[in-house]
Length: 471
Picture 1 (cartoon, one colour):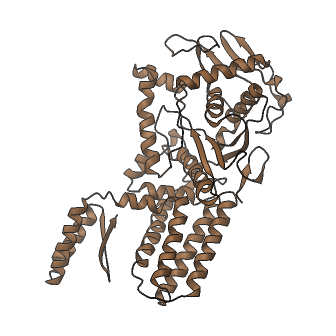
Picture 2: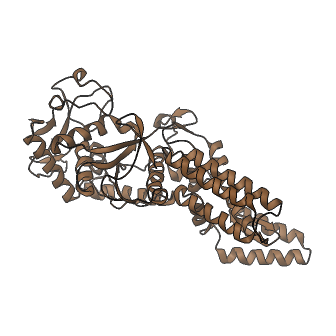
Picture 3: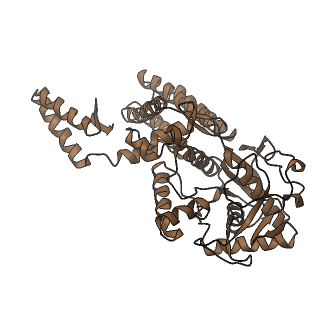
């Protein structure tokens, strides 16, 4: 049974959906004012593995919501600088996020709402009205605020003492300091040049926190939802304030499990624009690395441990994927028959270890170790000619099942299916090279190999012929 670490209780707990077999999960998505960076994508890739584990390991149906924050101080400022309406400004950033997510093999959630969708804005207004009715709000200068002193349980997620919070103060911006835990804005009064709506709260626009609370409850069928997830930096104030709003409005628990992904560092330093180490997927590609290698690297450590991104680590990720791909190709060369207990035992052991690793709070590092143990054991069996064609098929099926969760090999295969040189041209050059070797024109053979390598295609000769792969 899956056990997840619950930030709310600070312990691992067995997970099962509250209602039926459907796990209802909300993940805080990107703020669409710039291209998401690899630190953002560590969270999204790890949560993709959570989603896949729920589906393919645990057998649950999943209903996931991941939002686009398309109205806040940063998106509004960007739209104003560009001189375009807010939704026109954010649309290209949403598009590029979808493209990057697809390149990283992230499954598309069932719902990906924008905060500025009318149904969501209306739900925010309704939630604020409910909070007002329950005595949790006050208005000042046309804005509506949540008064944390009205909620005794405030601070449970981040484990802060509510009595230590400065009473009555307020912050009228969407960006907060973690050292500044005070009353927070629910609905911001209209300002000149800013977008404005009125859904029973007066003219203005939503604060950051109310957006996720309203979308989660509207699209996931009311409280409590099963899982709320995001980066560790969102625990406070964002997720703490989501709990306050949701529970203050509904008088019911908001989410049963809170899952948070740790920070990504770059070459042992915190990502910072001033250091020039805030990389996007496009910048990773420009350095000669593929998205599949980045996905592998982001899964190489437990999601609750800080991960250090290095270029050496990317090289190692490429080598690791290459080892798996080469192993799968080697399975095609098996021609034996019969039954071999060592192969069957290796497959069964790997399956058990893989499942156990993921059920133990998504231990992807241990899951990858199980994969490579199988590769090692079966390679030894192939060397000893102690594996049959049918057993090779069983190994291949196990590898496919593992990859349904990890999503690395299928991503690499999709990349290889779109090489930098047209497949027809590669096939033609391979045939020309074969003919050159037959007539012992090794200079021509080497020239074809080198030319393809310079264009990003590597040729590998084996007893079954020549195969190609992307460099």
